[in-house]
Image 1 (cartoon, rainbow, N blue to C red):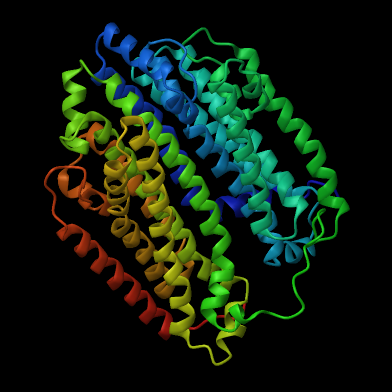
Image 2 (cartoon, helix red, strand yellow):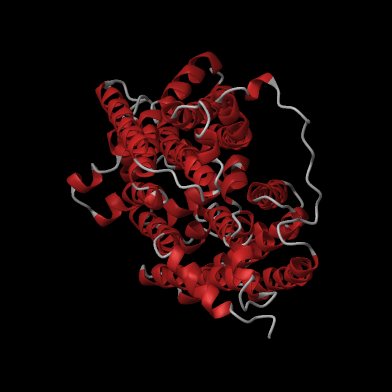
Length: 530
């Protein structure tokens, strides 16, 4: 029997299981760069306007820290920089996909079941990497084709597309290695995300320092140094391929030398007896969710610091462009271009916070699928109490992370304009205004889990649709009724002089109704033992 026996069948299984999720994130991430290019063509029609914008961007360390350096003032160069943060998302999606089909399968016991059949030793890891590699390459090709369709040079378009694809491949391989190091899927995801965060930090330090050598140590820094649309350096594309090969050379031997279900790193033993905090379902839920809340808060806090620091320069960079001034004022209100920029970016933070709500709500599905919910419900714990213990954190999490974002944004923006007491409450309020819309998506995830648990991951698809409507609605000139399907369309811009709180109450009520319907469905359906 070959070490790759059964790989083809595992690939088919992965494609069937991810038949909705995989095409969705490929499509979303492939279309966004094209929308950036279209926006730059519309907003900066003259070379002078583009040069002024590029000069303002190049002088602002906060923008460079978030997006990366800009090489030139062409529409292509501006688009490549604007899509810099997408590389982080591509890397995250790639490594999570690999962990999902390696360590998660092993932790759930399905890998052992498949291993009892005719299955090669390398088949599981190879199938997960192969599917993710192909998805990344397809994403890169679609991205390049979309950019070229806007009129940008083909060479730069394919350079950016390949850089994005190879960045995803590098982090997919890192995810494959992380899956061998720990015995839990959460631990593998933590290791992979820590490596991604370290790569982002190296890129940030290198791009904002006088010497950019730290960026050359980061897979996220290599994509920018390909320099799409600015004299492409194709040889840089070899770096992620070399790293992927080296990491895979370590991951494959580990995958067969360790025991099934075990990891290279020994598990940390907990206390022999549980503390008083674990005496009830809410204490257990806190134990399961506290790490996610902490790290999401840290990440959103850093994001807020960067956004607040970049706001003043972002507002100054569009001065002299009447069309862009009008658009930004319409987005963020009449209180200034900087606050208009902050209003737009905080709405994107709201979408990201909705991702936390969905993730926290789907933790119930993970507990049930792993067989841990049924023994707990066999005790005196009531179904409603168990479900509500998780729903509380699905609703509380977005509040916490958005509050941290608003405070961090208000602090750095207030320092830049020398008005911290005035900026802090305004930014906090603008961030918290996104909470009810995030609650709606969390409530929808609870609804799916309660009624149709197998379809619970569709909640991620709904979030992706909201992102598409928000990012592409104006570009594609979609009908208003279609845009209104997203709860974020109804979120008021509190940075305007006049706004109504009615949509906030309506969205909150809708979220509670969705969660209540999910609770009713969960109370009536069976909870399988496996």
